[in-house]
Image (cartoon, rainbow, N blue to C red):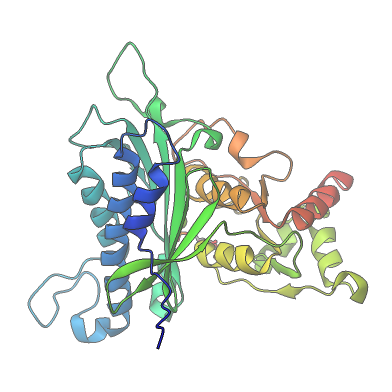
Length: 336
Ligand code: AHM
Ligand code: MG
């Protein structure tokens, strides 16, 4: 009897194999990605335990074992930063959890990493998916070698790699180094991320729109008209579209990548520049989206072309299937 088994490719194996596509690669970026993969496994384990916090103790308290319980977003931040610190390749980390830059032990390290360690963490209380996001840049050589915040202020088009981890019904890691998007699923029985899809592509057009409609009254005319267009009856174009909004950006973007459609976080009176952060939410997810064949704009311009002015700056975002984003942009232009 012939036994045919599909070969499992783990994240670590895949990263090492992919390194060969970059002649002259030193292996440092591969190491950095593997460090993030390891931290993601530890965070995934803790996120999955979050539902039993009543037994283990609520955040900020002491659990039944007498251990202090950290907030999960702080825990995720510490895991990722210490994983990056250990391998001495990264000189600086900027994270949603820290107001300023975090200098690591390797001031000479050539990479700068932006992190949203646990995006959507307010959703944990209600057992909804959350995610981690990362964005990696090369440190630019300067004569004055002191590491300063400005070194990290590079447009998204200069990212050398980016990705996200979605802690959902299963844990998924997706990343790109500019040669397409690869997705891995965590197999908890062996504790490994296993390749589930390489060369991941978003549908050209989709029938799902995703936006927090509670802010409807403070939207621009163009956006109001576009959302009305999504809701109109026109079977030929698949309308009315379906509305889906999880309120956890990584989960909303992951669904958009798989099923197609559009995700929008616009400017509003509460958030004149949108709510989401350019450097550790919008840029990395735009890089993934573009590498999967999608589009990401701020309403007019490509997100990854924006010249950043501050590490925590916010930006409106329209991201998803190219046809849907193009249509949204045409409404914004027409009713400006
Ligand atoms: P957070 O970084 O404080 O978790 O906020 C980011 C989250 C995103 O995941 C999500 O897309 C957005 O906030 C939802 O915001 P809103 O509740 O305003 O719709
Ligand atoms: Mg966030």
